[in-house]
Length: 58
Image (cartoon, rainbow, N blue to C red):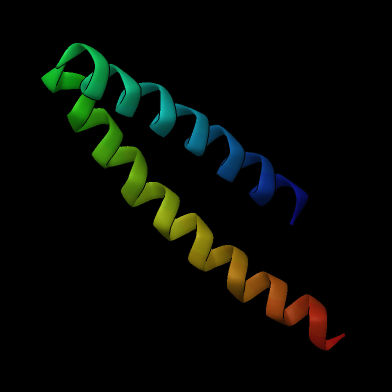
């Protein structure tokens, strides 16, 4: 679970960096990278929820 949390943190940092580049500088490629990171982040957050619920049941 700790590895999953670290992965989520890294994805969020990537998303934030690229989203800022798109908003502040109008960088279209950064927008595409931010959207890709957002999709990965959603998947990881769903996985975290599953693992977290399982851990809470123990």
